[in-house]
Length: 259
Ligand code: NDP
Image 1: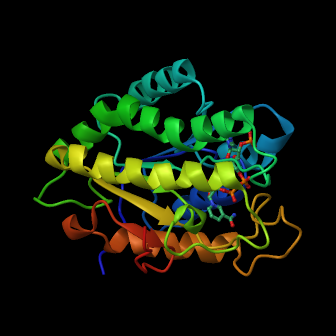
Image 2: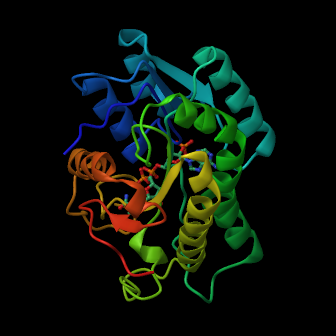
């Protein structure tokens, strides 16, 4: 299997949980990316301490302010990334930032559904649009035909909670707005794969497993997977993807999830 080898990567929600895990794994690679853009809402805040500490040790790690629910913030972030890249493209966009509110069907409100949908679904849509020129540039600048994550890719971190067929966990947590937002994110990933294929950009929706993060542990149970196991698994999956996988909905072990 080919090693995932990217010149540049951007991870949203990189200050904690899986986003931070992705950044740590990229930094530890035998051949780390030349540019790792770690985006977070509040780079100077308490919750960004870990990523700030990493920035001090790694000159290839850049923190960028990004609120995925704010189109102006996304545009400003894309402009900053372009400036840093100085003419080269962005290989890998990982739309990881996400939120969940543990509401039942009875409790859901317009505000909850709108906020969750804006963050989990609209955010990745706008990110794809804003970073498209840089992703295209990366695809054009990479040798060889076909699609791969080393060339140019959008990875949407979805959830099995968005699967209508493999409907799991309903008895313990309903999270209706979250489920709807991730089902819509799956559709978005498929649409992106169809539209961006001609530009040489691979697009997938990836379920990280049930992982020990703030979100994963919010229901009061200890999830089976560590951040390390999940991220290691996802990176292995990403390194194995090719043209035939674009538009797929996969888990952290590479298994196909039913929509
Ligand atoms: P965490 O709650 O630990 O972290 C969420 C991250 O997203 C934080 O960095 C948070 O930033 C950021 N974020 C939330 N809203 C926004 C926003 N509007 N703009 C920018 N950043 C935002 O979650 P996980 O690490 O567990 O989740 C990462 C992804 O994995 C999510 O998309 C989630 O749905 C998915 N997932 C997780 C599972 C699990 O078991 N953990 C299972 C299935 C899917 P801040 O610190 O500022 O709040």
